[in-house]
Image (cartoon, rainbow, N blue to C red; front, side, top):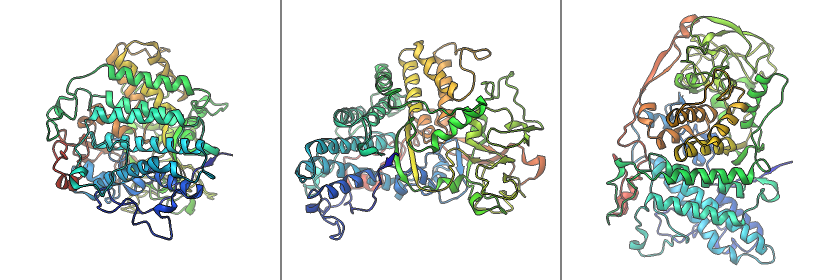
Amino acid sequence: MKKAIWILCGLLVMSSLNSCKNYLDQVPDDVLTIDDIFKSKANTDKFLANIYSTVPNELRQRFVVTQNSGPWTAASDEAKYTWDFNYANNMTAGVWSRTDGTIQNFWNNYYRGIRNASYFIENIDQSNAYEVTDVMRKTYKAEARALRALYYFYLVRSFGAVPILGESYLDLNSPIAELKLPRTPFDDCITFIVSELDKAYQDLPYEPISEEYGRLTKGVAKGYKAEALLLAASPLFNGNTAYANLKNVDGTALYASVNDPNKWRLAATAAKEFIDEFVPRYYDLYKVTDANPFRAAYLSCRNVMTADWNKEWIFARSVSENNTQYDRTPKHVGFPSGAQGGGALGATQFMVDAYLMANGLPINDANSGYSEQGFSNYQAPYDVAGRTTFNMYVNREPRFYVGITYSGSYWLNQSNSSTVVLSLFNYSGNSGRSQSTSDVTPTGYTVRKNVGANGNNRGALLLRLANVYLNYAEALNEGQPGDADILKYVNLIRERAGIPVYGSANIPVPSNQEAMREAIRRERQIELAFENVRFFDTRRWKIAEQTHHGAVYGMNLSADGDNFFKRTLIENRVFNKDRDYLFPIPNTEVLRNEKMIQNPGW
């Protein structure tokens, strides 16, 4: 049986990056003191677990920044939260600010994790030699090094170029002048992250220590190396002339203004090295067998998210608190409590439209068979019977039924109800606005993906093999267009998803690099939907000013009957193309440090 590492939060009270106190000198005496950290293996393990606690728990996105959860799903074009308190609503309305505590907390939390990791790396050799062997020290040090690199990666993908503190932890007793660090040029940030992951890789195991899944492995290090290099190769950071004049006070440019095609080749090489070394021995695409191929594809794409530590998972935060279940379960008034939720995370019509038809064609293709008129008797792959279904939702690809709960659909958890639990989002329905103005979908849909059997703690998935395959295809298409592997790895994803592959009947191979680029981007949008990828993809591609700005549509929440199934304006979003591609540097950091340059527009 697989065992997951318990992420121990609150074991230590960390000093702020801006504090003038000694590192950890405020640790409560009844928890753990500096002198005690390395006296025993138990305490050393606790300190390492505390470093792991900075890994984000994306199952808690209802409360952005709690356990470093992000606004990524509802701040993308995929979804929206009904609840006004969710920080994603600030972002999509264009009213987020450099003074917001949420922004400061992301910055502080990751830098605390970085400093704790650096302290651990520098001092682990002082650990009790009778209990912590040389092999343990090497492995523990590699874990901390990889975690530090991960936290820098999480910073740069949001803030862009950030200060790299180097190998050692920052001694907060140093003169103030030495604590005021400038931002490190972006390419140097990526070089440091990649170098640290390469070093960590050497001493990490292939499989988690003692089967404690959630601990760093060679696969995690190489997987995130590929992620970092893909980010560096992308248009936002590779030759973006909009950032050409962003420089430190000493004149050092923070971003290269000339496109470097070789960055794509480096990203492709890193992804291919991962595939060659780890697939299929350590990782493989997750597949479920079923007599019905359509249902097999549905179960494969659904369960890959909910079956903890299946073979496709590369990295996740283990045993994580889970708000996702409640947020994505419709209200279902009148049914058992096990079938009820808040249903406040709604998928956008844009995301509903992105899914393909069962024949593999997009809905705007004349041969797709798509219709927005009338109803049919249709049995979804999760249902036990046919239901009267709006034709918009009929004969869609398996991943549509994984990702979207639409009005009239059979709910996943029937909870021994004496009557069938159907999700009804029309005004008078069991999950409609007549039931609640808070616990209700904002769009006429709820996100269905990653809803499990219950709301218990479980793994919060961060990286899986499908990401790597699509990273490889994208980087290869940009660096070596026409390479046969591009089609191979895109088709592996489509094949598992149960739709016709490119090159089969009626699905021609994309004719050129641009057409293949669009095909890969669509595949990423669908395959990785609601997995905290789309937010960053649209930014690194520099298309968020189109995808995240303007009208957002759903169904008519104020209507019953056929009138509910009408495209209706939900809100108008704001994306400032001169500002919103990057988070602002927290205002306090800029005020305290004259070397800290603010991001454009903030």
